[in-house]
Image (tube, rainbow, N blue to C red; front, side, top):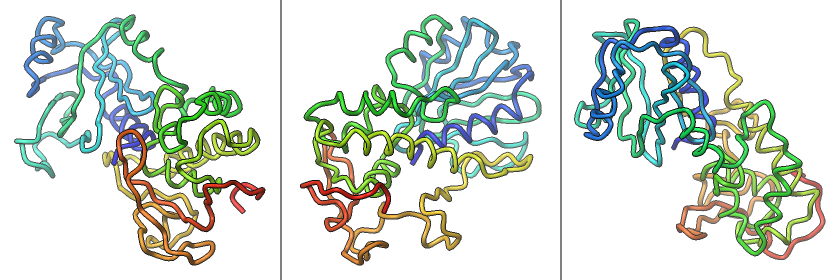
Length: 283
């Protein structure tokens, strides 16, 4: 599922192919977006930058226009050389942009709009700091986490207004590494643990975007890692491992739907007790 690392890698790949290229064709399954593209004269404009903020992919056309897309649970951008077969059916197409001998295709994207830079700035201002941004301040973001009060940590980490880029996979992995139960109120977490948790969020997401991808055009491989282990079967600590033994203590991993939106959450009941105890982070 798309999280901040996925969107960052996708933006980086699209940028390599499309930056400084003139848009030769554009279509969308979203009627309002098609109208907006026609009114803005999108075909003929040059792609000047492709970037990301949290889970939002931002494709810029000069200093005054941006295509903002959000993947939600099932959306994805693919990049193909013109004439190559697509990996998904055309019925799933939501956006097609042709430029520089490439076709950038957004499949099953749930949110898409063409907006001015001022509108974009206002939209991004409502989001928390981007975990993958160079200026990300983990200590300051830890204060934002603690300020969430009685809200459970499983909700706080997914709240893009607190920090932008953490999704359901990293949520479970970070809470396991911190030995924090997903339902712990944010204000009950020790400040030192909160600081280590946000610093680890930055570390894990950076690791998952730093691998060399060469000059290829694959936007996502699906091989997210949090354990640092080479074996593909050992990539994650708890996510997707319901009923399997904890990699620390052997207790079966539990999956429960938790929080405001009943999102699937994986945790170890032994390593992550609801009543906190004093342990070193990640030990």
